Length: 123
Figure 1 (cartoon, helix red, strand yellow):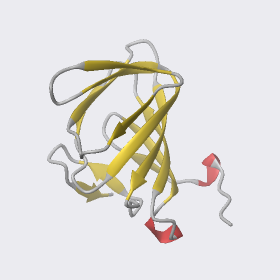
Figure 2: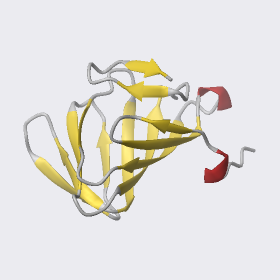
Figure 3: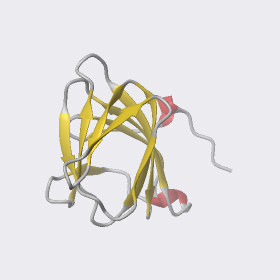
């Protein structure tokens, strides 16, 4: 059994926010769970070529803009899933940070940082 507290996770700065990785590849679960903060007023162009991701909003608000340019509001209680390695833009409200619980599959190594090419660098 794995039990981990937020205070025990490593914080990874990913450009417009902070990601705390609760589970990573080394835990052997096959997926990663993160607690992610998206800074207020930011816009992040993202794409995961090697992972699928689902995000559940637990605080704040914003929008996710899909590759067709359609904007989908994100607020507390909203989940969005990038089920086709979807390029997207994640926008946080100008008034407050947005907080997401995210699941990645396959699992992240744990120290990946976004690169707008869809690749990862390691800190």
